[in-house]
Length: 147
Ligand code: DQA
Image: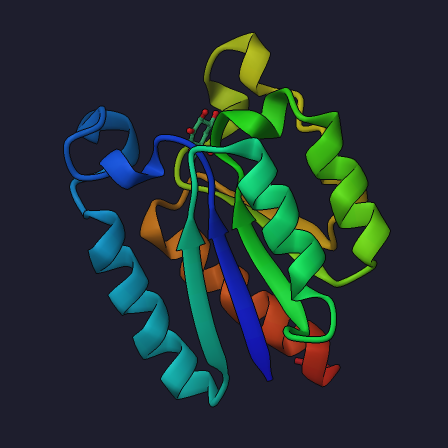
């Protein structure tokens, strides 16, 4: 199984960006932990970060036929992008939405996710574990594990 991990806007600044909210790990460190988790799960992970909505859309379109599922932290596009939601719905690949912070205990404008209705599920608030749990959940879903 090949899984695409997408990181949206401003996540390239992890480590220095509001560490009280997002933790002190850099994106590179998060990607290393994802690679280690992928090795354990015996799947292949490719990670991509972009600050550009269109690049994320192209990556979702391009995933069709190349990847069996997507783990996405769409950053602020979560709360703004109808195009991202339409792209996910269009490719019809299983997607897991993740957030480092718990978006529901933050500002009201973060409580709504445009992509939530088109993903399998969402994991929010566990820091880097949100990504690792998201990857596990997606792989379990793809393997149709009962536990
Ligand atoms: C985030 C939460 C979003 O509200 C925010 O815009 C981000 C990061 C998270 O991982 O907690 O950029 O997706």
